[in-house]
Amino acid sequence: MCESGLGCMCMPYKDPFLLAAQILTIIAMFISWGVWWSFLFFALPALVLIQLAWCMPLSKCGFITAGVLGTIASMMNIVAGIVLIVAYNSCTMYGTNCFTSGTEIAYTSFIAVAVLSFIGACLWLAGSVLVLMFAFNGRFERALAKCRGEECAAPSPGVVAQPVAAAASAKPG
Picture (cartoon, one colour):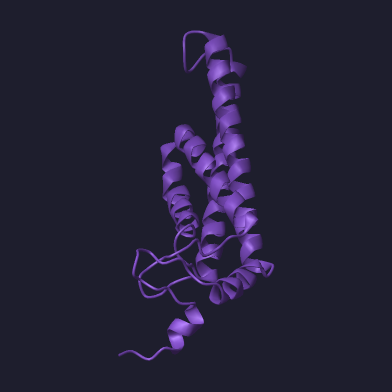
């Protein structure tokens, strides 16, 4: 938590699972956005929730929500990849070319976008699994316990930071 009434003083969750999930979801967001912009409806809230953990404490429910939204974004990427492959195959199966004048260009672009979609799905799923593992296997509780006991860095000269437990027990005035 690392708060002394002045906001976030340090990174509240120094867990390698969560850090990896945060980095993976940043990469996945850029790939998903490039494939289909409507992924933003699920991917952007998941990304924001996961990235908020860099600077502020989130509840366990926040991490579970981020994991579920990231899983939905992953499934949407998988569906988009399958739709792209099926759409290309259905157009070329009947000897027509629905998308471009050159068959090789259509094949390359559709397969490339489908592969990017599957890569984005894997990254979203990996990030979601790491976030959910952080929330459910005791890492969240250990991070909270560790952060409650550590001292926070002072935000500016002259401000003395106290551990959360000491700040909570101090009487005002």
